[in-house]
Amino acid sequence: MIIGIPREIKNREHRVAITPGGVRQLVQDGHKVCVEHGAGVGSCFSDADYEAAGACIVATPEDVWAANLVLKIKEPLPEEYVHLRPGQCLFTYLHLAAVPELLDILLEKSVRAIGYETVQMDDGSLPLLAPMSRVAGRLATQIGASLLQKENGTPYPGRGVLMGGIDGAPPAHVLVLGGGNVGCNAAEVALGMGASVQILDASADCVSRLRQRFSGFGDACDVRFFAEQLMFEALETCDLLIGAALIPGEHAPLLLTPSYLERMAGGVFVDVAIDQGGISQTSRPSSYDEPVYVEAGVLHCCLPNLPAAVPVSATQALTHATFPYVRHLANAGMDAVHEDTALARGVNTWDGHVTHRGVAHALGRSFRADLDMGKAMP
Image (cartoon, rainbow, N blue to C red; front, side, top):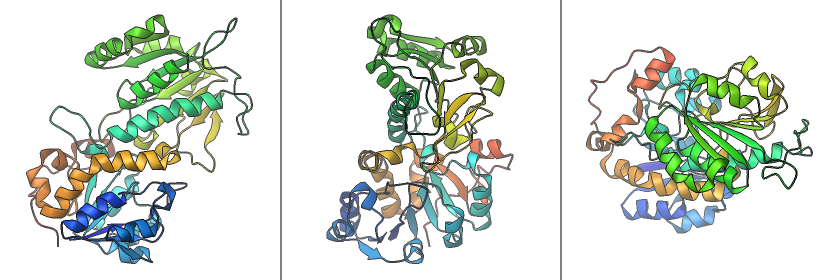
């Protein structure tokens, strides 16, 4: 099989879809791997590294997108739509609930698109979303702590609060909405910095698990079952708010209005859920060129590719998670979808049909669950 690795073109996206080590294994399996020139540079992998692993370095996007299986990090941007074609398998983060126009293109061009974020195990876990969620959660707290500083390098001065406080000054109050991989890791870093943390989650099992995990922090960490009134009260003293709520494939739950956010005016809001549309009516995607904006008196940071800030770590972690699925797709073709139920759950579009219930519901589209997705790729 021919496998293509394009260079990412999203703003400041430095990750790459596979490491040279992964390429080496695919080549040993008998596949041809085409890597676009410079695709790995941001993650400290040179073209020479990929060539040494057996890859073919190609000069143009057209050459790499001609592959049967295309591996990416982020969803195709409008400039890349021209490269999509019928029967092509695309394996990447899609987050279609936030980009309905891309869904239209995938359907029009009959692309077989599998979203990393919707590959789902029998227990409901999301193995390919998890590593980047953990990275994003940790980064959200680091970035939030920086934005709280009065001199934070942006046009908008922070409140001037030290995360861990000091004698005579209390620690920052961090509110985390959602206790999954993002929220748990965000809270862990915030607690490590000495902040006072409150986590609200709508799952009783998650609340119980987090209470046990953070029991050693005593009163510094308060984990509760989500209630709107609790959130409303917590916003009054909130310095740093982290949006971490998720419904697989769906738009993130809209939990916040401008009037709610006004209760924490002067604070910082990092909405990690922005890649699924965000948890606030005030959330809109920002970029590393312009990472922040102010609305409802609150400094917003809504970067849809937070892990791009640490591409070396992120690329290694993501490849570790995705490679078994990539190898299965390469060796078995689209029969892999028929053989692996977790991978089958990740299919968002197939030959002009929406095949993920959450995506269909989020965007008001018809849903097909009766397709035979066991055909080999052309």
